[in-house]
Length: 459
Image (cartoon, rainbow, N blue to C red; front, side, top):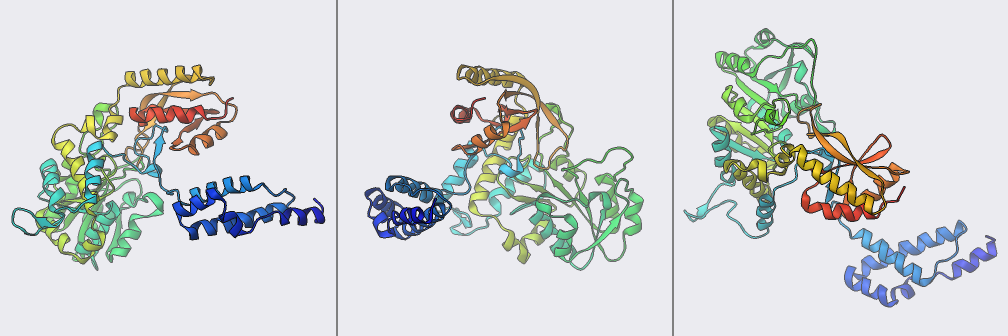
């Protein structure tokens, strides 16, 4: 484009005021506010000037108005939104971990109103927020007391700060784990003010290693379940029960950071056995820390269970207020725990619904979807695959599944198209195809999934 033509195109750009006087733009001002619309219009016209400088023609006013609608609607679109998880990873950390049950979502929604969060309705006086989950947790696990905080890392930080600040905490080198986001157990311990004492080696730690480390400054023996990785081969770890005996002999608190929060046995579903909260407490751990949003299947929370005097001490610690959870989380957690108490976790808690889903059911659903895709011009078939539990639980453990494979020219383009849909769909790319694992797609989301698939680029 010549300089003269560029100047000619630039002169076609309307002023901001003129663009705002367009009828449909005035409607935007009413919907989003004049200031927001003004800023979006200024940014749009600036972009158009740059495009003309790079050789493009000035768009028509109609095109500008359409682009302005698109710009401002994107700015007001929430950045966090629902996603259809077609990856087959049940507890997908990047997709919000555990999906919630209908009852949990309803309970959390009801917290938009006033509630008796810290009010005793029977006594007509101030109450405690802790009672709403504590009684249920104690009934389900046999713990003497329980405390809910913001997440499992917060739970461990609170325990270390309240019980071991300025003193020694003994831990196996094989359990110095790194959790999601690059956070490491040793770094959490440093923040607590506790002094870390490492014993054993990466792959082998014996009871005598702990015994040699115990001294006058020892406040705690910390056992960390390696829920997000597995050591195999020439290994040995000291059983929790042995640490408990050592703790009792020396008057030292034993804490088990269990992490995954399983209340049900995973073995009946073809998975290896994941240590349960009940087993940890039965082995004698003074305190057990778990997550609420992994195998428990509830909202994000850290849960501390164990001896009543220690729980009482933790409740009174100043850090507890900084780590406390809202009424919304407590309501969702309570509703989730009630599923377990009623014996309906397998049918009502989504994580357990997915883990226990029969392969025959997956075959039926996958076949139906593949046939529907073929009827709409997409090449698809049903393949054997595997679903991961995920979320830092049961490392390398998978469940057999039936997935739908899309045969497409560009798997990347199709996956990107699915992610850009509303609601977004996240799938797997495997062997040049796009895999859709319906284990993690609830039946009531399948219509949305099919709508998204209608818009993908054909092979």
